[in-house]
Length: 135
Image 1 (tube, one colour):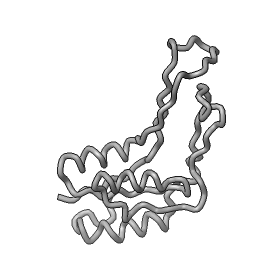
Image 2: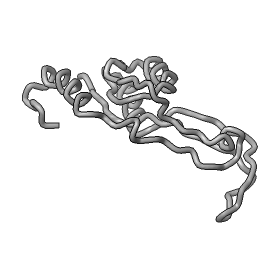
Image 3: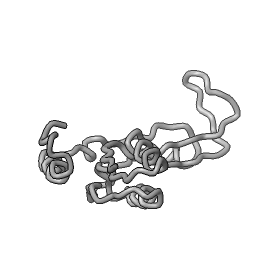
């Protein structure tokens, strides 16, 4: 069975702190770890670990090569990832320095255009002819 998984690729940030923060409290973190996540990526990883042939569709920015590599290392086909020249992830400098600050994603840069959908449809339709454009 082949799985086409379409969904987000996000960095998960985990901070080690002395205690849970109170509202409006700022606290320097002891450490920070960045890992791979996102609902789409997590689903693709789970399917691949269950032994299925997985193709992940989505869009990655210029900063997304680590995600592409991560998916490939986990046996996921990345043929349907669209690479964009614009960096998609906007990171606050204080967050990278170990402070609890906002880390944001510019979703406009990750949006699939009609052209992108049509290209993906051209791939899916031959695989699932009974679905023909109804997904």
